[in-house]
Structure formats: structure tokens, C-alpha cells
Image (tube, rainbow, N blue to C red):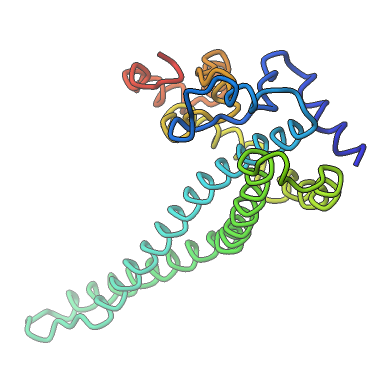
Length: 265
């Protein structure tokens, strides 16, 4: 249990900006006019470490969800291309020229062109299928879907005990953290699911184009004040764009969208 506590405390010591790491934003619909109730969510207690778990794993869950949708779209696109090419191959195979009176030379040209076309389409289908298999899209999609499901189940358990249950009805803290620590350690490890470059690209896409979907979430927002952390968002965007040549040319041409981004306004 000490290793788990040290892991959480190290994350906080890395930056003063992460002082809100142990606070979970309460949605407006759950808020009340009672100031003492609002303070209850923020008062220092041992359960704050559980809220730290929640913020970290909620961040990973959102990244996995976006990345999973991205590779699903890629796999679907390649699958659609295979269907189109296969359909075109079938069409050329069944195509006949009997109604046309072609000379022997023209017939030879037609047969040669048809053979080349079918061979090219066959090679294209094989290459696309091999690429999909090499990238292991289907297996990765299954792994990510399972991980997101586990994360959501774990987050629900954390949220229930740390925020929704009255203090007097909570489980014993030390029993709860001992029971959950192994699951937390597994869920907080993601290097076997997503590469660092894919992780940073996904965080960039969320920050730049999907800011409304992470409203009130750490690390994009200060969970104590519910205000956007603009320096964090700008740092993510500048760092990613400075390291990617194509993004410098394409992404920066879309600067007009920044004025609608709540993280950048």
C-alpha cells in the first residue's frame, strides 16, 4: 500500500499546477447552495488519494476512448477499401466484350489490360489486408474496449465510495485501498496498449478539437475552480505542432477554430 501512496504523491510533487489532482469536479446538477457541503468535498482527508486515482484513471479512460474510436475508423476505412476493390475485381472478371466486334489485335490489348487490372487489384487487396494485419487493428480495438470497460467500472466504484456515499456509510479506507490497489496498478499502466507518440497525438486532438467533451476534467481543468488550464492546453498544442512538420502546415491553417475552444479563449 505504501508503494501506491508514493506513486500518487510523486505525481503531485512534480508540479505545483497539479495541486487540484486530489479534487473531483462536482457537476452543477449535484451542487447545492449549502457552502458547508461544498467544503466537504475539498477538505483534506485520506480519501483524497482515492480522488487522485479517479482523476488519473479518468484521464486515461478519455484518451483510450478517443484513440479507440480513431483506430476503429481506420480499420473500417481499410475494410471498405477492400470491399470496393474486391467488387471492382468481380466486375472486371464478369465483364465481356462479345457484343463488340474487335480485331485480333484489339482483343489482345483488351485481354492484356484486363489481366493487368485484375492483377493490380488483387495485389492492392493483399497489401491492404496485410497492412491491417500488421497494424493489428482488430486485436488492439478489442484490448482497448476491454480496458475502457474496466476503467469505467473501477471509476464508478471510486466515485461511489469517495463522493456519493455518506462518510458514516463508507467502507473502511484501508480495507478499500488494499482491495483496489492491484486493479489500480494494472489500469494505470498503459504502455502495452498505446505508444507514447499515439498517446501525445490523442491528447493533442482532444485538446485542440474536442475541448467541450473534457469540461471539468483533470488535467485540462482545475478541478477545484472548474477553470480551464490554458497554459497546459497551449503547451500541449505548441509542443505537438512544433514536432510534426505536416501538422505545422495543416493544423496551423485551422487557427480560426481556436477562438471557439474554451481551453484557449
